[in-house]
Structure formats: structure tokens, C-alpha cells
Image 1 (cartoon, one colour):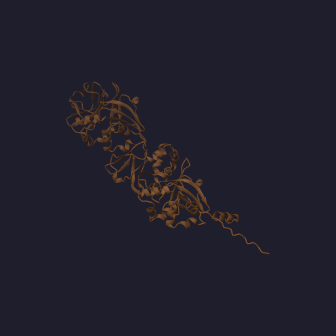
Image 2 (cartoon, one colour):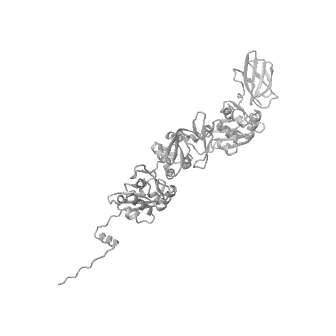
Image 3 (tube, helix red, strand yellow):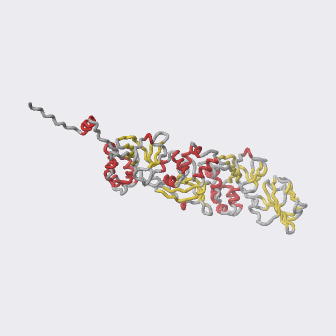
Length: 518
């Protein structure tokens, strides 16, 4: 009996896989052959893997991999940043290191990514910083995952819109130098993608952990309370400039615009070389990274509208220049203090310059400029409705006289505009520069006398020197009356209202007193 021969089966690759599948002999899939090499959106990545000779590592059936796979647009963007093309990228000497920086040695589905995860890829030169936003987006460093969970037998592929590089960034500076609170805040505010951009250029003013603790105490909370602040991202970006500024490039009075546009940063370099950003002192400088520089601060700066901003925003150019020259920016930008500032107009400063036969530069060069400015400043917020007639002590230490009998006068200056409020106080605009009463008094040893009544309107009395030559000096240090006292009294009815000093000399005795004329 003649047997029939069996037909020869011709199978396609697909039919072979199906046939093997029937027999339980499925061929294993892998992240390279079955995802990357077959994707029309990842031809540049496939070419790079072939150029670096990494196909076999990604085909390994015993591996458990996660590949963050930049798409073709990502490679085009990288080529443009480096001023080259895809061939230039394939010729990079560190191409293999760059590719291995995209691969984890474990399988991590997108659902397992937690915001702030820091993981070590196969290239251990740097870690990968993962972000999961409140909207559910996933980032690896600055690159967003645009297609997730492309699974195979030896791992998972997540497509990304950018190539990540193992660069040392300003975020790495914070992590590597144990800025725990700052790092946690950056993660919470979902700012890792921005600050890990290898092609960004940043200056970061980095508050220490103690700085965050101090702020928490001031706000009567803890670090968790700070992390829950609704404007946390704005606070953090207020510490970041979009350019690199080394410590040597900072000048006194530099006003810089950070990434937060809520307010500007005011820089101070004082006469001893100390550098401040607003009220915070720079305690360590010039910690460099591949995408910027970090300066360490002893306090957290806040984008609050301060009395300094009132001066800047309302055109008080001379007052602003004086505050900068006197190195008072750190004090007056403190968001946790409160001040009342009597702010002279530019015309008021011009008038003072004319009286002193000088110009604005002469005013700014006055050795007692800081005292003059502090004489315009009260501790605490005092609105116009809180003012009462009488004397008030200033931060300079001397009193000013508040007169409400006809409008509002501070010494002999009129308040032209009241109650310009800010987050750390209030500003009242005045038409004259106030001069501390002791500013023009010769520095000689004087016996102090009691002057009474005080305030007075007609005459004053004193009881140490009963008679002798006297001199009355106004708040500007100008002698306005002199003569000989009779029985320890002097008529003052012709004087204008304000603060005065009286100096009385008898034989070799000199006595000095102070009174207010109402």
C-alpha cells in the first residue's frame, strides 16, 4: 500500500508564533525588539541603541527593566540644544552613558511611581528624580511621560518627550548637601521637572533647614504646615533667578527678578562684604552645578509687599537710593517685622540738599544717613487713625513730634498722603526730610537739664543753670534763637511748633535739654 506524503507547511513569522503558542512555546518579548525597534516614534532611540551596542542588554530575557524612551521629537530637541543633528548625537562619546541613564534595573509601572521618588539607573553617575503631579502626569527629571506601561516579558517602556542627561543640577546640590526641607518643599511643589532641566540656567538662594524651622516657628506651625502653604511654589520660585549670578557679580542695591513674578529680590552688599537677599544673609556662596549656582541663605525670603516695595513702586527714587546706600534693605524687607515709615518725597530731599548747599549725592554721602532714615521709622504699624498728638520714639532712638492740631504734622513736615499699606507695615508720605535733633549738635560733654513744662507753648524753665547764655537748636540742627536766660526761663512763643534742643552755658558749665513746642 502506497502511503501519501505529508504536505510541506510554509509558515509566516506570525503563524510560527501562533503555532508555538499552541504548543506552549511562546517566544519571549523584550523592550527592544517588541517596543522600541517596532515604534515609528522611536527610530532615533533605536539607532542610538544600535550605535552604542546595547541591543543585547535590552533583549536579555532574564532582565527586569524599565526604559524611559525618548521619542523622535525629544532627540530632535536635544540636537537643536547642542547645535547638531541626529548624526552628531550618535557620535557623542558618552552616548552609552546617556542611554543607560534612561534604564532602571527593575520593572516600575507608572502606577508605582510616587512623587519625589529618587531612583538609581544602570548609569550610576546620577539619580533619576521622578514626579507625579496632582493631575496624574509623570515626569522623569524634566521629561514628561507621554505614553506609559508598554509592557514586555523583560520589562516596561515609558515613552518620554525629552532626553534626560546625567548632569549635576541645582537639585542635586540640594540633595547632596542635605537641604532636607528645601528638597522636600521642591518635591511637594512639583518643581523637580523645572529645576532638573539640564539646559536651564539658574541661581538658587537655598535656605537651610534651620531657616525653614525659623519660618515655621514665626508662622506658629511646623514643616508640614509650611509644605501645605497654598503659595509654596511661589515662595520657592521667589528664591530662583533664571540666570547664573555668581557672588562676585552681586552689587549693593541690585534688584533682581526671580522666576516668581510676584515681587523682586533686593540685594545688599554691605561695607564688610556681607551679602543679603532681602532680609536673608548669604552664608555660603558659589556652589556650582551644570545648570546653575547655589547660594545658601540663613532665612526663607517671602514675596511679600514690604515698605521698601511701596517706596520703589511709587517713585520714591531718592528715598530708595538712600535706603540702599545706608544698607537698610535687609531690615526693611523683613516680611515678619512691622514698620511705620514717614517717607519724604523726592522734592523733600531736593529741598534738604539746597539747604545744605549740596546735591543728592551729598545727601547720600552724609555720615549719619542711616540715623536720618531710622528717624523716619517706627517699630510697628501705626495707621493715621492710631496717631495721637505728642512724641513717639523712632528706631533711631530720638522722638518725633506728632501734631494733629491742623492736619497731620510730623515735626515740621506735613503728611501729604497717609496709610499706604504693605504686608509688613504702613507708609505715610511727608513733604520734608526729618533730621534727628542730635544730628547737628556738637559732640561735647553736656550736663542734662530738665526742661519744663514739656511740651510748652509760651516759655520753658530749667533748674540746673539758673542764668547764662542759651542757644535753641531746631530739629534740623539750625540755631533759631539765642540770648541770655533770666532766672532759668526762656520765652519760646515765637518759635514754630516742633522739637528743639536748648543749650545753656554759665561760666564753664554747659547744660543741654530737649523740649517740644506746641
